[in-house]
Length: 67
Image (spheres, rainbow, N blue to C red):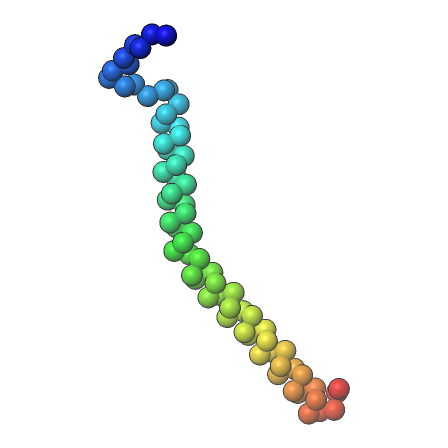
């Protein structure tokens, strides 16, 4: 078994593709982390508004004898 030194190290031709993919993934993950809070806030607001509308409908129907 030969111990040939490969110095200076030259990366494989597809090395840039892997590094570029990892960098792009890191950037997308950071961007999603920024938007995740806003998305959760909007979802919570929509659920609360739906609940309030449903309760208002039930109270109105009950008061007017619809139920």
